[in-house]
Image (cartoon, rainbow, N blue to C red; front, side, top):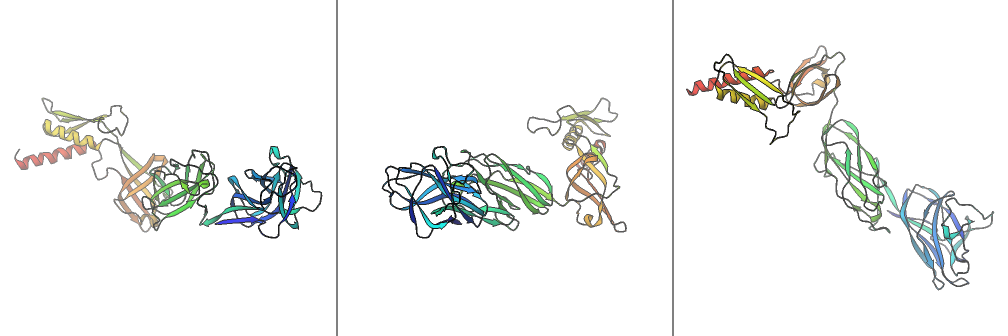
Length: 447
């Protein structure tokens, strides 16, 4: 919401502005704010001739934190407020700040106005080189009246564990925003444990302005403010900086995340949404101490030879993986294997070779001996996928659950997972079974 802090009411008394002097007074800011404009009450009715130039300032203690654009007071100007932009807007925490002005031209007719209260300070400060970064009080205890100066700002509103900025329709510094942020974490398809997780993105503004980020995460794609929806809006961040937020308490599910940049200086001018990142969150199950994991691997092959045992002349055929239509899922180095069948002709061998090649295009893994707590094992179902990461056996990925055995006395569950437990574990077994099935079909059809 919009807010103002500073001296805005009372009976103004006009006083001639002195050149190369900075005049300030303290005022309390009650809330966190983004200051975008300052205003001073002045007129041009003083003695002398010519225009007076002023800049408005904000000090935190003796440290300069904001300077406005320059304003001009003409020698015929009627009393009233002059609004000057703070560009870029300045973020201030709640606290006490000193507001004031610095002016030039001692012979000009510019007047400032005060309320008669004595709480301020002044310091010698050459106007031409800008306000001093560190204020030096030269008032030596003399009465320094409060100047009619105030600052306008927009407030921060709490949104759960994050902060959101409420901006007006337009700021003093228009900008154009284009493109979309890039999410670097989590990565597309990443597996994550339940609980909090960190998301990181970056965006470079075309005019190098500061930006805020709006994040959305949901189990709907794209996020649509459903039951599991979270929205997080950051404070201001430097253009191009990597910004991280915490996605709180994600449960086991498929989650979709996206973000867009928010141009704070253009009153809600948004970038495009980033690409949606899909991540998989699962409950972590820990193996029991002493678990003996047994891993069996059926290696990949890109060429299969099938030979009928004892045939004379030789009856055989082969199948070779064609990389033209489908990218290789393993190294292009030849990985050949030979399969022997008990009986058959060339057509049968070719069929067996093709089927076996389709089965052997990638490495297949079977793992047994995985032991977990019974309480965890009872949550598992045969046929469902289980994500596993086991450094000692080199396992990392998703595998179907093939067998579950519960031992209620020992309060433990043994699980077997793998890609091929429902299929023969050797190439020879598969070929023999295929050949037998085909032979039986041929007999039934009288071929």
